Amino acid sequence: MMVSIYDPDGNQAYGVITDVSVGGAKIVAGVGFPAGASLLLRIGFDPDAPYSTSGRVIWCQDQSDAKHRASFSHGIRFMITDPEQEERLRAILESPGFEQPVLPGQPVTASKSSSSG
Image 1 (tube, rainbow, N blue to C red):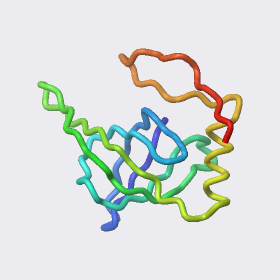
Image 2 (cartoon, rainbow, N blue to C red):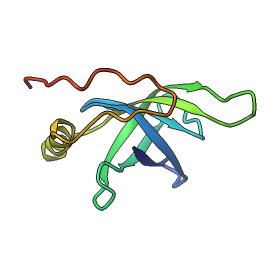
Image 3 (cartoon, rainbow, N blue to C red):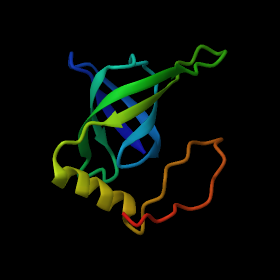
C-alpha cells in the first residue's frame, strides 16, 4: 500500500506501508527520516480518497542492500487528535475487504484477527 510522506520543510517522499494499525504503521521508504521527526502521511487505502494524518517517527532502520539501493524502515506513531479521523481509520482497518499489506519476499501470515474494540 503506497504512502506519500511530507516533512515539515515540504520535502516529499514515497513509501510502502508493510504493517498498519490505529496506532501507527511500519513504512519502508527510499529516504530515512530521523527518530522524532514529524511527518504528514497520505495513505492510499483508497486511491480516490487518500487517508491523511500526521505522525511521528519512533525509529528508523537502514536496510539498504549491497547494491546501494536505499531502503529505510520506519516505525511511525499516528498523531490523531480528531475522534472522527480515528473512527474513519478504524472503519477502514476493520472493513471486510481490508488485508494487511505484504511486501514481495515477506512471509504471508494468518489473516487478520478481529478486535472487540
